[in-house]
Image (tube, rainbow, N blue to C red; front, side, top):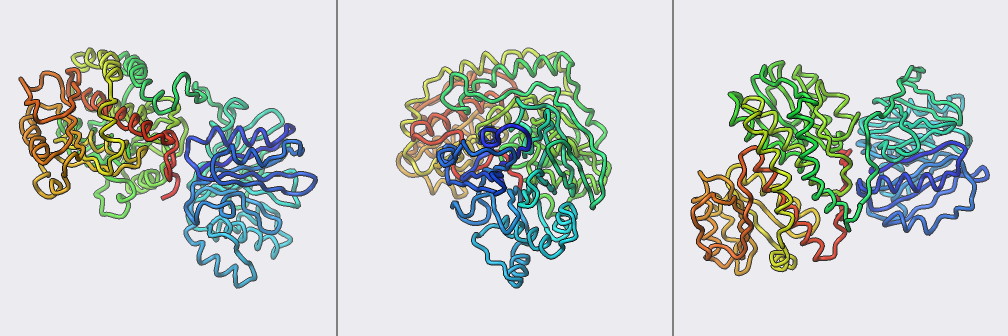
Length: 590
C-alpha cells in the first residue's frame, strides 16, 4: 500500500502521474515511483522520501502516453529504493496495494522454478507469479493470465499491470483493496482513490472484488472469472473539495479550525431535516466496530446511546472483532465507523456481520467508498476532505452523528440551541494561549491523561493525537485507576492532563489530581466552567475552562483543546505534522 495511479491517453503521462500521486500524499507514504512506456521500453524511476525527490529524477522530455505510479507505505521490507514500487520481472511491471498473505509459499515455489528475488516485498512475488504464468502459458490472453494469478494469490490486493508486449493497455485486478477507473475524453485513469483525478473527470467505474479490468486508448472492459461482464459508469455528483491548506501552515490546523463551520453545516442538514437518520429502535443490541480514532468516537456513542435507550451497546476494535465469539443475528445492528470507508479490518467485520444475518449501518465520510457500498444503511458525515493523517474534524463529525442517533430518543427541539451555540464556544477555545502548556510538554518523554466515564474516552483520543504527531509516549487512564498501579509512574514534573466535565464525578477526579500533584506532577486541568464552586489552585498548574454545555455536545467541545495541545506541541518540536512517520491515512490492509 498506499496510493496507486495510472493513465492511458493522448496526454503526456509523467505530469499526470505526479499530479495524481501528490493528490494521494495525504494517505501517508515513505517512497514513490513510476513506470512508463518510452520508445517501446518500460522505464522505471523510484525514490525514497517525498514525491519531490522522485520529481528530481524524472526527465519530462521523454514522451509517453501510458504509465503507472505508486506511493508506498512499507509493510514488507524496509524503506529502500529496491523495495519501493513499481516492481518489474521479465515483461511484467506492477504496482500493488494490499497484503499477499501466502507470498512466502509462492516465493519458495517460484524460487524452485529459477526466480531470484531482489527485494523483501510480497509485491515482487506477485509480479513474478504473473510473469511465470504468462511465460508458461503462451496461448493464454493476458486477462486469463491474471485470472489464473488471482486463483493463486491469497490476501488483499489492488494491482495495476503493464506488459512489455502490450504497449496500448493497462490491466487492473482487485480484491478487498479499493481501485477505480476514471473515464475521461479519449483517456482513462486508474487510482486507489478517485480524488487523484478529480479535476480530470467525475465519471468512474468501481471495480468489485475478483474483477479484472482492461483499459486501452479507446475502451474499458471488465471481466470476472474470465468472462466479459457489464459495468456501470457512475458520476460523482457530490461536491468534493480538492484539498488546499488555505492560509494555514498545516492541513491539521485548517481542519481543526473548520470544525466550527462544519457544525453549522451539520445543524442545517440534520436539525432542518435535510438529512434523515435511520431508525435504530427495532434492534435488541448494537455492536459498534471501528479502529483508532473512529473507535474512540464509537465509545462516545456507546455512552450516549446507553444513557438514552434501553438496549446494550458494545464497542469493538475491528481487528479483534472477527476473531472472537459474537452473538450476531437479525436483532443485531452493527455500526461500522470509518472516515475513509476503506479501513480493511472494519470492512471485513461488516461482511462477516452481514453473512450472519445482522443489519449493518456505516458512519462514513467518503462517498461511494467500500464500506458505504456494502452496508445496508449509510450515514455520510459530510466532513469534507481530511488530509492530515491525525484525524480531527472527521472524529468530531462521527461524535456529532452518534449524538444525534442518541437524541432520537429525546426531544431534539430542546437540544437544538445547544448545538447551535457550539461554533461560538469552539472558536473561544481556539483563542486560548497554549504556549505555556506546550513549553512544559514538548521535551517530555511521558505524558498522562486522566478522566472518568465519558471524559476518560475523550482523553483516549487526546492521548492518541499527541502520540500520532509528537512521538511522545502518552497514556490515558481512568482517574480512579491511578491507585491501582499507574501512579507509580509519576515523578517530579511529569505532565498530567486531566478532564472534568461531569458534576457527579468532579470531586473524585479532583481528589485524583491532588494525588499526582502531591508527587510533583505538572498538571493541566481542563474543566467545564461552573461545574464546581471553587477549585484549589494548588492542585493544578494550568487550567482551561470549557464553556458550559450538555452531555451531547460536551465530547465535541472537550476534544478541541486536546487537539490544539497536540498540534502546538508537534509544531514546537518542528515535526512533519500532516504526515507523521510510519502512519497512513487510510489503512487498507488487515
